[in-house]
Image 1: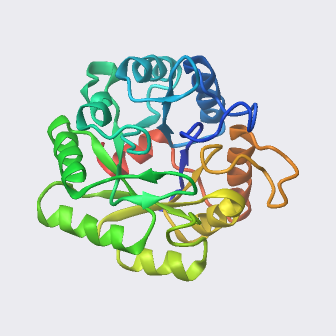
Image 2 (image 1 turned 60 degrees about the vertical axis):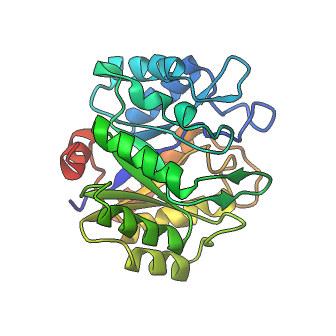
Length: 275
């Protein structure tokens, strides 16, 4: 498939209302933002849930409310849920959302392929935790969204393939620019892409100021882009204008149009990834 996959990351775990009023936190806000961007042509959405106080939560009941609201209006949109280890480390908590069933079952779930230090906090992903999460995703027939922040994480994906824990086609989200990992540079991206297994689709996003540049590389060279307020609360590199998810997606769509790159519909994305 030569069409562009747009992966919206609307919320994340870090942005707060104090940082930007444009980050959606409540289920109603997240649903509204996702459906608004669905009209622009996003292919998939990477969800994080927040509790009543706006803090990250693993609770599947809150994810269920968000998924229900999205699927009521955009039933084909590919839905990815987070199993992040930034704020909770127990397997039962991190895998709670994987137990949703029926029309609330997610299509995909994030699987970060190693531990990583962010600016002020670590995301701990031990080998045992990664293997257990991958195993449960396979049992539940939920495809992993393979999150890569550095070259070594790709090697761990090859290890999981050898163990029979993940199946093709593989979908990688390459996230560049974190302070303790690969930077938002063409050489770093090229090295990572060169090591991806056969039958892989890859999207790229940038943390902070260089999100737009990394999205442009994804449009020109890749299978897709990762874009949203989760990774970057500003619209411009000078940080003079706060971003909204809609404006960030509109920019990607505009870039793609200028390059003559068509956007993959959710249905086309499902078919390509064999969901």
